[in-house]
Length: 172
Image 1 (cartoon, rainbow, N blue to C red):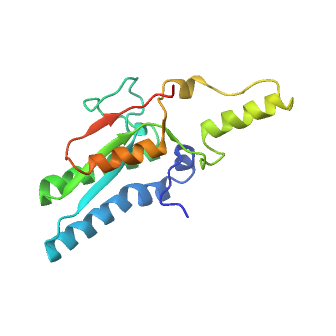
Image 2: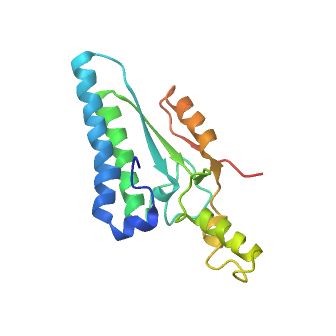
């Protein structure tokens, strides 16, 4: 089961669904948290996972002061979710933090993501089924990638503070 629509390419095919799940989904969660906190007086910590897609057309490197300029429905929806989190933090005093994550990889990555496309192409090249990797490799070269496990640890640390931190990891 998927928790969200997380593919940039798919967001162009189905922008309304992307906005509903990514942006409005975050708003629904924040409203539920705010209502629960108001009713029970319990302290809840909310983490909104952002994306490098929020920066879109801005050239790298980006940091927490770089303005958002998304170029996909997915990036636009992530920016909306970001601002919903800021709004609920400032208006209702919720503990709501945002983390902007760059590409992250896992052995479970679906075949329609660029890194899986590249690794599958390399396998086909090795087997003699195709002559070279096709497509725009430069499109991913500027993006830094990290492992999902490392980023999950970082998300846990984010929940212990309110500040936005931009984190990049490099494959070595």
